[in-house]
Image (tube, rainbow, N blue to C red):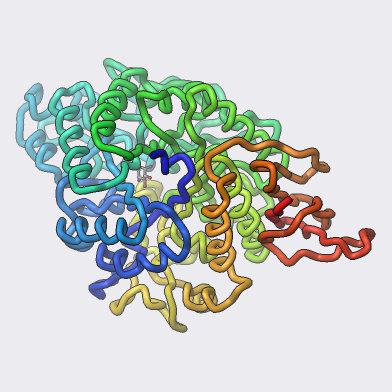
Length: 550
Ligand code: GLC
C-alpha cells in the first residue's frame, strides 16, 4: 500500500487545465471531462493546485474558505464527483493544502482586523507594533500596516497574511481541514510552503546571507555563484536556517498531521520544501512525518552529466537513512518551463529570467531526454501539465493580462509565473484551442496549433506519444518506480544506470553520438542512428536518452 513511493503524478493547475463552462477559466468539470486523457497518458495520480474559495490574489494560494470550492471552479459537489470519477479512472487525487497563510478575505483575518491589538483574533496571525527586516518572497517588505498602526506579517503577497502556528486554534483548524478532505476521499496532500510554518520565537531579523542573496521572487530559489559550473557548486548547500524558515517546531506540526493521516489507509503527504541542506531536508521525511517532498535540487540542476549525477547521488543519499522515496521534478507552476530552460546556454534554474535567449528545438530535444531520465530514476515522478506537450514558457504576454502578484510587486522586473500557466491547447487550429468555448484567461500563442494534444496524439514522434509510451513502459516494469538503481561505467558526459537486472537507461549529454550498450531499445527520445564505426549498430544521438531491455 505504498503507491506514492513510485507514482507518476500529474500536476493540474485548475485555472489553466480545461474550461467546461466557457468563462475562460478552467474548472473542476473541465478536469473531469479530461480524465480519460490523463488515464490514457498513464499517470497514477493527480495533484490539483488549490481549488478553494479564493479572491485569486495568488492564483488560489490565498484561501478564503478551506472547506469550499471557488465558484469559478465549481462546487463542493463537483469536487466530490471529481474525486470519485478520478478513482473510477484508476487515478489517485492529491490536493493542495495552504497552511502558511490564509487569504486576507478569510473570516479569521477579517475578524483580526476588526479586533484590537493583543486580541485572541490577532493572535492567530503575526501582528506587531513594528516590522522586522523580513522581505516578502514576492518582493517588497513582508509587513503591512493596518489602520490602528500595527503591522501584520506576510511572507508572500499582502493578501496572504501568515498564520501563527504557535496558536492552538490554528493547529486544531488544520487538523479539522485535513479530516474534512480525507473524509471526502482525497488520497493525499501537497503541502504549500511546508518549511515556513514555524517562525523563530520573537521573529528576530534575518541575518544577511554569507553568499549571494537568494532570489526574492521564486519561493526558496537561492542564487548560484555566477560563472561557477553547477558541478562544482554543492547543489544542496545554500543559506542556513533563517528565522522565517526550517524552524524545529515545524516538525511537531507534521508529526501531528501524520498521526491524523495514518488513521486513513493509503494516504500520503508531499511537502514543498526548499531546504537545500540534505540532512535538514531529510528530517521532514522521517517515518513519522511526511512521506515525500519535491526534489528541487533536480529541477534546478544544469543539463550537464556530472551535475545531474551529483544531484541524483545526493538525493539518494539523503533519502536512504530515513527510508523515504525520492521524487523527480522538472517543472511546476512556479518556475520557467524546462523546455525553455534547457534551450539556454546556462541551463540551471537559479531564478526566473526573461531576457535570455533559448533555442526551442534544443530545449525540446533535451526535455524529451529529461523525461526519460526522470521516469527511469527510483521514486516518484512529477509531470506539470503541458510538460507532456513540450510547452515552452510564454514571455510575450500583454502586461495587462498578467495576474501573478510577483509581476506587480517587483514592478515588472520579474515577469512572474504567468508564462508557465497559459491554458493548455487541447485541439483545433486557433486559440483557445478547445481549452473551452469562451476564450482563455491568458492568451495562448497561435503557434501552439502544432502543439495541441489532438495533433500530438496523431503523431507517433510527438512529445505526447513519447510520454504515453514511457509511462506505459514504466508502469508495466516492476523494476521502475520505487527500488534500487546502479550506475554503469560510462564515458564523460553520459549517464547510464540499471534498474533491476534487465533494464538500462542511457542519457547522452555530449555533443556527439555514442554507441548504445547491448540490448533491445524499448524507447528513445530521438531516432537512433547507426554508429559511425560500429558496422551499423545503433548509436544514441546528442541530448537524447534511451531505455534498453538487456
Ligand atoms: C508556493 C506555491 C506558489 C505560491 C506560494 C505562496 O510556493 O507553489 O505558487 O505562490 O507558495 O502560497
